[in-house]
Length: 308
Image (tube, rainbow, N blue to C red; front, side):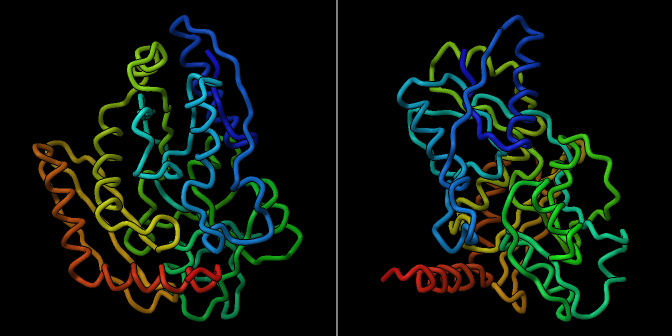
């Protein structure tokens, strides 16, 4: 079987994780590197060029053309609207869902002086940073993890924010400060790896044994919420579900681009009928100001891209 993946070090580390798990079960695979639109655009933020599915679509096309059997993605990059022929056959056990702040002096966000320049490629992180620290400067940063770390080391930025899971998967024991959900609710599905296949295929039957049920349910709750809200990567949206024995604690929010306004829900839901509860939470967030914030962001970036 052929596994399709992006060629970044992090993407390859994730694909190798799936490959090793399948090998341990007696299935041999080979890797096929596929360059995506997100890999090709390096001079602008993805949200400024319609980045929805930017790291996924080309790999989907290869699968639909039967060029690959399995696709491995950071699950947060996988749009909620998918080709009908494809399915997320397995969601691997989640790594850390949290964001991490890296600075040259390994200080906390609270300790950073006024005017500090923080780099991030995420609209959600930008808005949350500006909400929490109005006196810092947030700038876009592109490139893979090692490129961003080099820019930090070279002094282009005083700090950068990355997904803690990415650092873990690269096996880099770097000094960093975890940012907790109280102020930095993660992106939906952050820290999760998705293995995608064609529906009713041999690959689906093979891969589904890797599925981690708890992570599957948590990520489904998050995906339902953002599906209700819409917006993709052009809207600062966060959603995080954490299983707590017989219930699930769910946090979700929508923010304005400048971080000055936001609406947030935080509730415990029962595992029974979790999909219905997730739908209700999405609707609640939408009706409490989320709809206006989403449309505002969409209009802004439509103007930035020169769309009518």
